[in-house]
Length: 263
Image 1 (tube, rainbow, N blue to C red):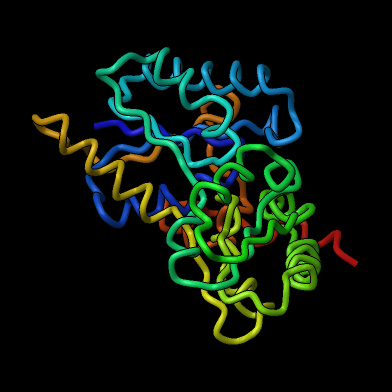
Image 2 (cartoon, rainbow, N blue to C red):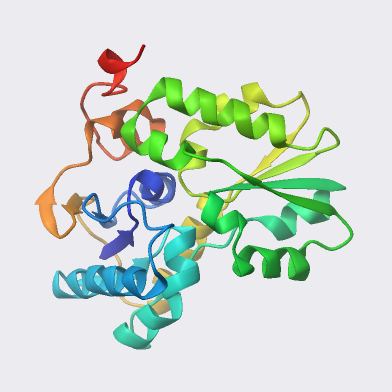
């Protein structure tokens, strides 16, 4: 069975890696969009059109399930994709783990892109699921882009700046961009000891598998990984090999491809 994952960049790696670990037999179709990335600052209809085009390509290649492991894509285009593909094709979106974080912690910071932090969508999620917790949005300027480039220096700088803007009483940090789990260790190192991190990648992968099982019939595959870059057959960028999730999915290449140009 082919499961298609759609994201502008490397944010699909954590969910893809969890799917590979939980169901290594599934055939994964990874669709990135280097020509259009990043999606966050783009107009809403532009993003909808981009995501719908990727969904149509997935169907043409035989995908039975579509996953949007991207907050921007889920916020902007999830319902349109569901209308496009019809009820027979499950479409799984991504929601930041604000609800479990707020249930477990008295003070929570939501690390996300600048666009998501300023969005009505995130504000609504905090209102709906924040409960009695004190929830603060923290914009991580440039972090997702630096992760896509594999730029270690820029990654560390963006994380340090976000940590400085995180309130000192924070007990839990929600990773509100699917890129951020790729640098989990660096985030942990930048935060005070004892701060808990909340990520949705494993939950999205588990929900995808539940939707696959609900389809009935055989879901077996050959365990292949196919990559389309803005609709063109290709491979994951070299930067993907810098991250454990990328290596799980078979990414190869030089770690931190921009290292020779740093400082």
